Image (cartoon, rainbow, N blue to C red; front, side, top):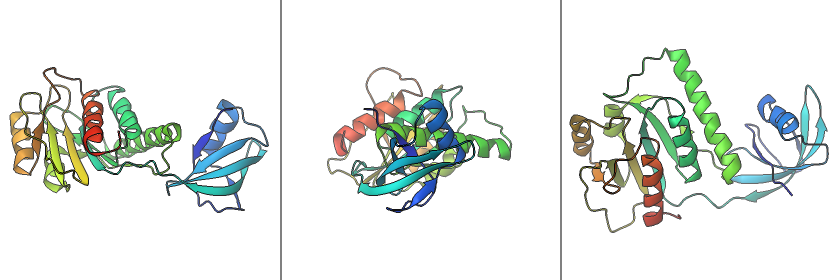
Amino acid sequence: MRTIRLHTQQPLVSGGSVSLEEGPASHLSRVLRANVGDKVTLFNGGGIDWACTVTSIGKRETLMAIGEGTAVTNEAPLVTHLGLCMSKGERFDWAIQKATELGVSLITPLTSERVDVKWPTDRREKKQRHWQQIIISACEQCGRAVVPTIEALAPLTSWVAAAEADCKLVLDHRRASPLPDKAPSSVALLVGPEGGLTDAEIGCAVQSGFQALQLGPRVMRTETAPIAALAVIGSRWGDV
């Protein structure tokens, strides 16, 4: 029997009802072909899965009866903040989707010397909403009930200066530093764009307390590198 999990922005209370927003309502009826009486799990980012039942499906409104809530305990014990430089096409979308599946806590898209992004403010806001929806969809699929946030596009230099974490790492295939023996509670991870980070950018990160992390002798693509790094970090200090 299939399991349907959907995200809603609305408050959820056991014994109540909820009218789904247009997006999840359309997905439920048109894509999943749900019927009245079907069981659906709803979550709103508060860490709880709510057992719900479809009570009405119409063109204007889809209603759900809210049952019992169950706390979800699959959040990673390690808080990770990913600073990821922009990449072309769907590579960035793919990277943040997989990062969500691996338990990332927060993502900041970055501009750098080798990232040429000249978007007007309205397009930046649209992109941010698009990325947040990718993260929500990834949470629906992987079972997370806490939704990571993606911040507004920021300059790399500003992000490294402001990043706060017990351990700060910058990916660099040319050099590496020993990782701390003691497990940190939080990690800030900087990943460069296509073409990599410049020496000046790596130097800027090092001055802000970042240490180099090398993932082996091969150069990884910009969408592969953050996933490999998160898997390594999660295996060493988290729950992977």
